[in-house]
Length: 460
Image 1 (cartoon, rainbow, N blue to C red):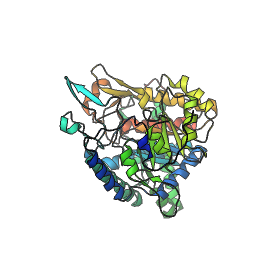
Image 2: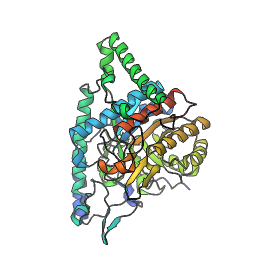
Image 3: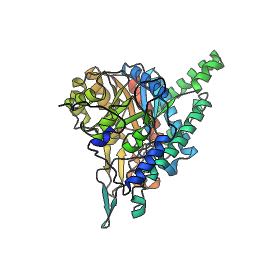
Image 4: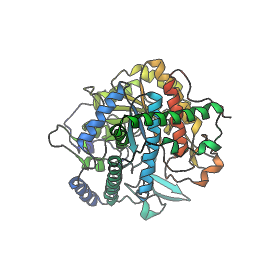
C-alpha cells in the first residue's frame, strides 16, 4: 500500500523512520550548524539541475549515455588539485571512448563534491574488544579508530560543505578554461597496454579506437577553431548519495523565477539500497525535491517495490526525473534483472552499477572486487536489456584516476598479492585509471556490436 501523500516541506522527513540516522550528543550544536548551512550560498544552481534533467530525459530515449563515476567515499584530506584533475581526466577519457562506441553524446556525472557520507550496516564497530561508532564518512566523523575521531561532530557538516564548494569551483574553472584538450588523444597515458596481458584482438581494438579518436579530432580541427573549441568545453555534473538529511535539507530551497524546491548540494542525489524504504525519511525527503534522483536497486528488489517507489517519487512521470541504478552482482543479475525489466515499463533511465554487488574479502580480510565479475554483471545487464527491449542508458562506477591497487584483474594483471601495494580507499575498492579505461573500451565494443560480448576472454 502506498503511504498517504501529505504536505511536504524540507523538514517533513523528520517525522519518518531514518534508517541511517546519526546520533549527535549535542542537538543544539547540530541545529546551529544546520542554520549556518541554510544561510550559505548554494553549491549548485537550479538551471544546472534542470539542464541535467533534460540530458537524462534524452538518455531515457537512447539519445545519450550517462557515465557516472568517482570515489566510494571522498575525504576532505583528498580535496587536492591533483586528485580532482585526475578524476576529471579519467571521466573525460572514458567518455570519449564511449562516444566512439555508442555514436551518441555522453553525460558526465562525477561522484564528487559531496560524497562524504557513507551508510553502514552497523552503527558501531568492534576491534580487539573495543567498541566505537562506525565511520560514516567525513561528513559525520573520521576514519581513525579512536574515540574522539569516531565521535559524530556537526562541525564536519560545514567542513564537508566547504570542501565540496572548493571541488566544484575547480571543476567549473577547469571546464570553462578548456581543460578538455582533445587535440592529441595519442598522447594519453596508455602505456599500460605495452605490458598488459591482452589478446592480440583486444590490443588491436584499443589501438583502432585511439586512431579513430585522433582522426575525428583532426577532422574537427579542419572545420575551424570554433568546432574544436566547442569540444574542449565539456560539462561535468556532481552527484552523491543523499544520506545525511540534515545536510541535504539545509541547502534545499525555492529559487527565483521557478517553482518547487531544489536540493542545491548537488545536481543528482541518489537514494541507497539501505534507505529506500517507502515509509522512510529518505523517500519522504526525495519526493519533494525537483532534482533528478537516482535509486539503487539490489537483488532483492521486486517489481512491486519499484512501482510503489515511482508512484511516490515521480507520480507525474516527469521525463528525466528517475534514474534506476541496478546493482545485482554478477552471479544474480542473469536471474533477477530480466523480470524487473519486463515488469517496470515506466519512464526511467536504467543504469548499471556493477561494483557494489561484487565486493568480497580476501583470506587476509582485504575488501576487493574482481574486474571479471564487474565485467560479468555488465554483460548480463546488456543482455537482459536487449532481451527485454529496454534501454541500458548508463553505467555507474567507483573509480579513481590514480594508480591504486584495490580491484583485482584487468589487463594490468593485479592480483591479491598486489592489493597492499597501493590500497588507499577507506571504504570500498575502486577501479584504477588503467582498469577504468579498459572497462570503457570493452563497453564501447559492446555498444558498437549490440549482439556481441564485452570481451574476448580468456586473456592471452
